[in-house]
Image (cartoon, rainbow, N blue to C red; front, side, top):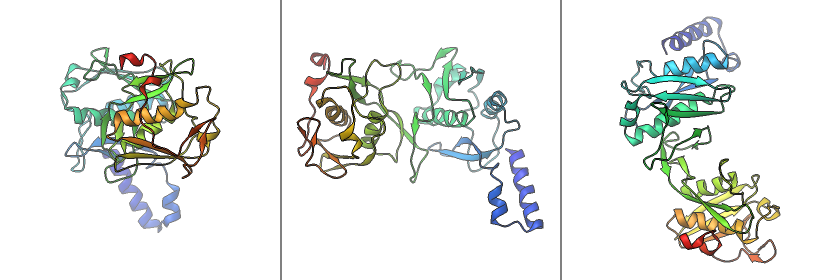
Length: 313
């Protein structure tokens, strides 16, 4: 970070001597092209700082960023992501993703810090051209959650954020998402599909976003909602979740039973949120019929009879 600070001082000096205006300042985009992520002094949020790579080659940037994760930080504004006793034993770029292997001290981190550490590392590496995802290992084995489930590969969409007071603070959402089975005649439950989301994104909106995104790649489930469907609003008022979607929701040609798109939303929301019903509207209108005969002008409640192997619910 000292090199970046020196470059900033030299840039200001040159601008002062040459009378640089706003146009010249805006022309220098190198400073803000990449970011390095750190922790706030309270370890409650991520903090960004400008990062200028020494070489603009993917492999070199991966190596440089891995080293910076363990470098001491001389700042009152932030601390480094990894505690001193956490070491990167090895790292590798496989042509698509970065694999990081940590020592066993990684498991000693508090859960709140560990979430931010993973978010900061993933967000840092996935800026690099050619790096799509990041995989965490500990002692050569896949890193797992408290239930023993591997985190697997993580990309920039794993940690969703939005503008707000604390845009880089995350919590974990262990939710059930309902998608269609292979035949398209039943719903299937995909557990733990929520991952980490910004505290500034309401959980109910995050769930609808994930349903539109579709099931994870390693799942046999099918999507129930077209990916180009736009969310116009999601809110909870007096125990009712109101979901407002654009007309794409009505015009989609998903090869699933007509009830499944509606109940994939309803079941997912009612599992995760303390609500007693869901009202779906299309561009603000509820007096519409979805597909052949489903009126949206009513309050929907979860229907687990539509779930495959519902007897196990």
